[in-house]
Length: 175
Image 1 (cartoon, rainbow, N blue to C red):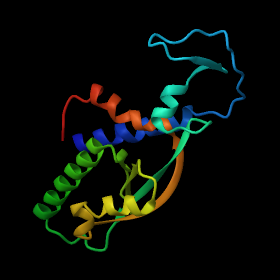
Image 2 (image 1 turned 180 degrees about the vertical axis):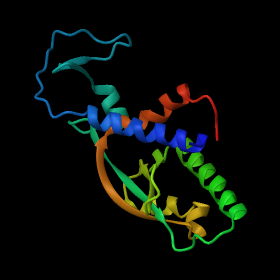
Image 3 (image 1 turned 90 degrees about the vertical axis):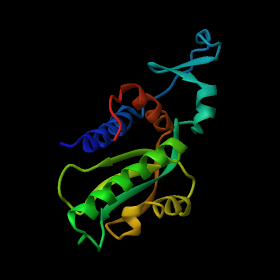
Image 4 (image 1 turned 135 degrees about the vertical axis):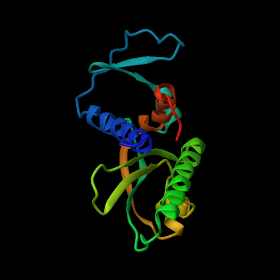
């Protein structure tokens, strides 16, 4: 597996971990809890501690969730490029992913590990499908017709926006 695929699969599995760890458990406030080390008020919810300031910072609703836009990257109608052009487009595609992640617009990117028509996913931290479409149109692989996107609003954990910050701490190599 290439280092690009490994990097993107790490991001995908990070998303999977966050989604699986979100449960629908009943909540009970425990007002006797002290603040955290930074003095933020905390409320006990089941086995977790609610951080109101962090929830506001991340744009979380009462369930710790928010709306994103998910993109399914599909094989496009123009995949007839020679190997050199395909490699150039792939490199530009990965650089575009990095640019969108650094700007905070792209939270998750990752390939699927089979050879199906759906090649990978993006999760954008933007409020509308139209904004996500404008971002996808900056991708050289989209512009060349090598990939195309299906965009859909998606409801997921507001904590996803912290994933890239964590990933930077565990990434040894850049692509």
